[in-house]
Length: 76
Image (cartoon, rainbow, N blue to C red; front, side, top):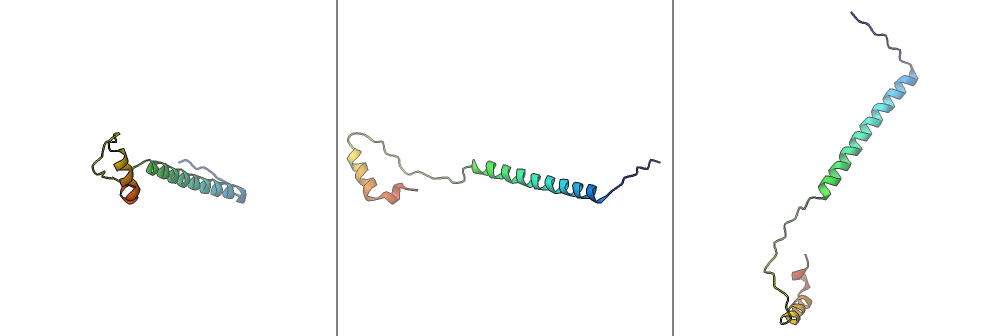
């Protein structure tokens, strides 16, 4: 049978308690930072674009007028 004698005084208990609290805080900080970073790079919206018109010299003014008259249709 092995018996190990451990002496605890108030300084050791406070140090152990502070180390445990620091480890818990560090764990939550690292895990929340990881979640924020990993979620910020994910695209969550899927925008379906309507018909895309090719911009040429002939239809430039028509498209420009359409965008100017109806900006809500082109802004998402």
